[in-house]
Length: 191
Image (tube, rainbow, N blue to C red):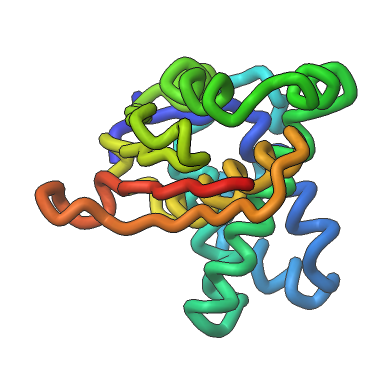
């Protein structure tokens, strides 16, 4: 994985916060034990506004998936992390804005939001289903970003919840025409 593939420290910092609040001390120790000494040394100094190699975040996500014990539990945990990230990102001021924003307006902004948090990859949004309270989105260029799909699905669910939407359903699949793990299609429905 290239060193120019970066994530904002906010994602790393909030993943650490999630691990601290979601797992017991014994499980947290198991997660930390799976990290390289370099990453373990870096974690206490992570700052939200700085950029970090995506490998740091992937190491945390992979360690969390490993301790989950099963694929369905790893999926639930990754989605819960995504919701945690959305809750942290939608603080008081942003929460007020989201109360008046509609899902179509938010989803149209996804291609602009992604590069503020990651130096690689992209989101494409198909607005044709907006009138039916659904959207299709494609995430591309995320090879090597293991666990990105369920975390992103949870984030999208969390933002929709902050907008007051009910019945949010976010599903994803890998794109067959792309190398495995490098692109995903998301189908989002809300009421």
